[in-house]
Image 1 (cartoon, rainbow over the protein chains, first blue to last red):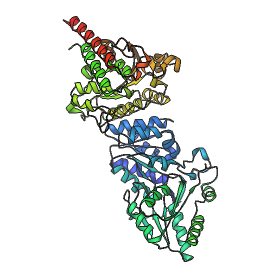
Image 2: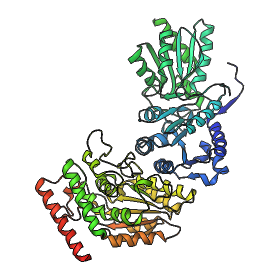
Image 3: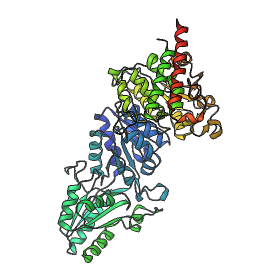
Image 4: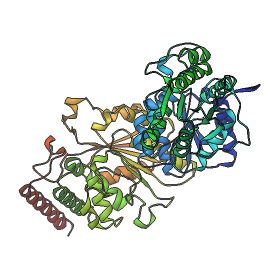
Length: 314
Length: 276
């Protein structure tokens, strides 16, 4: 992979929100006092009358968003993933998803790559929490270019959406011309020995791993699972049929996230040998994003290693 | 019709609905009835054929367990046929044990306590952005005031100076396991809300005229939201249910049902004589 550009997905989120604000007059944005971190500040500066800082009160923010949605607006509520999906879980469940209201929840600082703030601030359960609630759509953009498409698609559809946005600068490797359709996985690379399903920042790691594997004579397919719910069953089943081995990679707990979603599909339709790379049921710690990803096995090196173990087994 | 008589009719419907279904929150239904009757028969700009009208007033029953009272009022006002309530609380029915927006006239799903006022804040902000004249009404329970999330909404309502928002606290002084003051002190509600920047009115909440005066007064208060502390009686209108904690979620026996209906009919007759 020869990538020259890096950009934070959250920066792209802020820019996309600002741009959408110009055309979508019904768009309103709420934040819980983190606008300069979530980057909703750009929208807030441009459209102050459609921006509400609700203070450090995430639950109130989600319910207020529900009230705005009932009244015909399209609210986008932002905070850190831990507080948005954890503190305000029941507001999202009972006041947004149960009445199926048109609220978009875009949470930044997801996963371990929050970095130095440590375990209290690293959401490793948010995908699991959000995908288990009926009526919710769950999207995890893999880079800055895809972020804008994801936000646009989320705003265009009617109903609750959770967008999981990451914090640190990350490689920009998708193209403007690449397609983005909610619920339709993007197959980035074909291969016959194993299929690697990755989401968020791990998609890039999977691509790097696949190149290295190719050098070693292993042909790995790589799939960008930008939508965790609704999950693209067809792509999962057809690739499992073809490769007989499935590896999932996510910056999230191995319980309840992408790996679980893929396993649910395969166990019922096409039982297949699987390995889930993720955070092994433990909390995070302080460190730079790079240090933490390496420490918890969320790296191309570990993807290569786990793939080789799987191939040896068969 | 004298609204006091209407309230007797609604109370009768509530007792019937709950007796027939064998479930419901009768005590809180009967304490909140007069507030609902004033709003739905006199104050609010709502109509069955205008449930999506952008100018309509908005109502959120944050103490959603009092849904039987809301169903009785909405059915009587023609939002749906009364016969629909025969399915109340049965599998497949949209008339669920707590409010949901599949029912004509219900704006918001509630019942899990501590959400409704925040939703009302969102509706009030929307009305302001849209430059609409509609008002937003939210009814909370006094036990509900123990939910910390309510105070986030009280803070936001005061901060944004939402004078198009009126909240009620159905202050019947009882919650599911006993008197509020024994479980978690709630006095003085008046002082608490005032400290957050709200206009506070404290009234006898089962006196419809007092409710009406307060709602009217709130419309003219500028730059702050109003809370009406409605000092009510749980189980109001049925002698053996009044101020009895056990009637939070009890279902009347056939004999109790007959007595309740009789008492409400007597009360109604008295009001009818008064107004002649």
